[in-house]
Image (cartoon, rainbow, N blue to C red; front, side):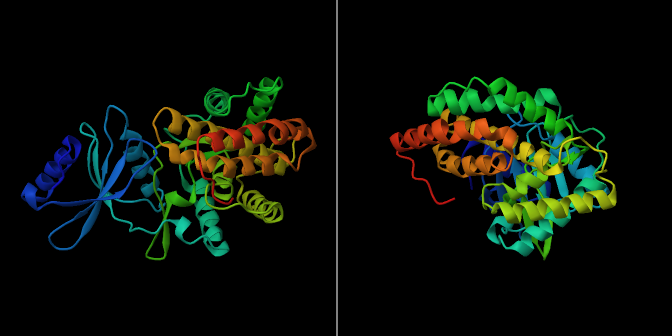
Length: 337
């Protein structure tokens, strides 16, 4: 029986829902989260299990998760069933999808399946009710890099060209068609359950650029594709999007690969800022070890394009050495990329 106030309340809520004595409730931590959400596995007397989400309402608004889950389930997308929701307390009881995220099986075939599911998400999920992934939001995300990574961890001023680079990345992102964007379509948020992939952690979904979830998957935290393989996957995605109408040959003046790489650069810069914020503000120092991996993604995104040569040079000559020094000073052990 848990003893913290939140877990005690969660146990009472679960017991009341299932007509059980509170001291018989079997709740075990299933997963944490970068946010304030926590997930517990509830085992019922008949052996059935549920996942119970604890999302403190003063920090996490679960209403978008519930609304999007209902919309996407109605659109025949694979999302967990919501058995019960108490938004006032911040408790949700969900279908148990097991313990096998895609990052436990990072084969090429698994990524093929994830891309096929992404095609379904983009062609079946409605845009109704989703916030716009607009210039203001893209800009706020980019601003996390100088505010948290450069200023708080690395100790560098933004380069003189930062304002121009920032605007160019925003413009290229907005040149893409809009679709439903999961916003963290990473291997850890795709659960393999009964030989089928399910979407989880989609509460931050927005209506935004076509390529965002693709690069969340291909330039996420668990794998670094070489440039040739990444390019082939981008070309295959483009062909599928042209075939089903998500993309037309009249969409945008710039090459599709440039717009994809610009989106990937925007996300990598955002992630560098977010991971530094998690370490500095929230005390989650383990995120610092992941910074070199996303720096490598950022360099991969910029390297193929002449127009990004100056920012690529700044990253290699100034940012990378300063980041290495900062991590070394903090005693951060960095695993391979």
